[in-house]
Length: 136
Image (cartoon, rainbow, N blue to C red; front, side, top):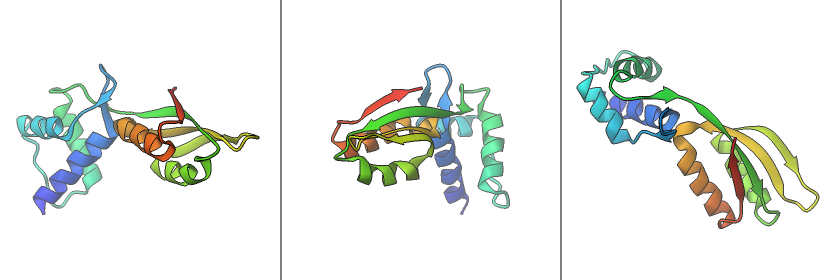
C-alpha cells in the first residue's frame, strides 16, 4: 500500500511539475531519487495531495522544480478535426476555440507542463503530423 501511494505521488509530481531552468519535465526516476535523498516519509493515512505538498517542500532544495501549466495553440486540419477534438478536450482545458470555414479547428489548451511531450505525441498521432502547434 505504501509503495502504491509513493508511485502515485511520483506520478502526480512528474506529470504536473517542471524544471524551471530548462522548462522540461522531471523524469519519475529523478523525483524518486530526490525523495530518497530528502528522506521523504510516505504516511499511509495522508491523502496523495497532502503527500505531494510535503514531498515538493522536501525535494525543492535538492532539484529545481515547480508546478506549472502551459498554454498551447493548436490548429487541426479539417480531415482530423472532429475526431481529434474529443481526445484533445480530455487532456486539458480548452480556453479558446474556433471552427474555421474550411472545417479546421483552432484552439488554445491549458495543460500541466509535465505532459507537454505526451500532448505533442497525441496531436501527432491524431493528425499524422499535420497539425500546427505553438507554445504560448
